[in-house]
Image 1 (cartoon, helix red, strand yellow):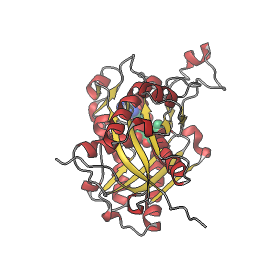
Image 2 (image 1 turned 180 degrees about the horizontal axis):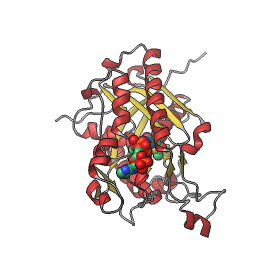
Image 3 (image 1 turned 180 degrees about the vertical axis):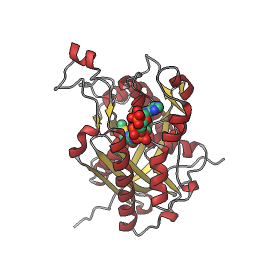
Image 4 (image 1 turned 90 degrees about the vertical axis):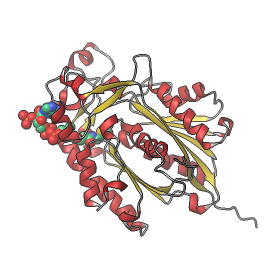
Length: 340
Ligand code: ACO
């Protein structure tokens, strides 16, 4: 009887795209009743990037994907699944942003679809890629997190407009027979009981486009900030403790902790609870704000491009977002590092 060799999913490359336009706290001071001091103290955010009017989620996703494909050293023809996480798709109903990105990349005849898990979207997709690869169904998965969050932000609402930014990140996840290159563990979960913490009511089947939607601004993101903050700290900390404990790894042995970049105070509270040193915690929230599903791959790309991320080094991803959803992943970087 022939025995099939086990296959593992490995994180082979990373890429990101950041729009050119910067929206600084000084710019926001001119738009709403806020101050640079309040924003920095409460969130750690100094500036965020805003896509051009004719620059869409798929454009940013495509640019990030091109970089990830080039760095993976595989041909685009070898990609057999394209998945995109976004809550700001080019079109809310159809076609999916993954289909549009595939076409822009010149990848045809492959399965392509989107998922909606807000800020947890990228790590959710890693679980999808892992399952497809380890079941033997796919070999090279292009995973994208892309958001034009500015398209659903009300720039007269000071409690939300200071937080979010635009951008995209992408990765190639490939099959390998080398266990040491494979994902170690991944956990993703959700609790719809907190669905009202983060909502964009329209457009959707409940609120199709109407005068009411426009008059009441139902097309903008609404957030229970304080409640979300408290739950984020609790859930992120618990999630990391569990994944480390389960895999017998101490927090001080993680070179790269990449939490969702929503608010510096959340990241600091989680890092402190886990007894992480400052050099272990990746921070990009100050310059990009919260880019939802793009936040983790953009942060990963940052440490990759600065030469901080080396081949074989452990990455711990931890995220939290609307749904509510949350996810964590423990995996080595299996790509070629940039040596600086
Ligand atoms: N400038 C000045 N004052 C402000 C601003 C602002 N931009 N925004 C709110 N305030 C005021 C409020 O009106 C309030 O005033 P009041 O006391 O007179 O009523 C005061 O500041 C305190 O407001 P809080 O909402 O309690 O402030 P908090 O310290 O909680 O900070 C924040 C707000 C930054 C939004 C925080 O709650 C937060 O980061 N929440 C978590 C967001 C998050 O993590 N989201 C993750 C998921 S995102 C996703 O999935 C897409």
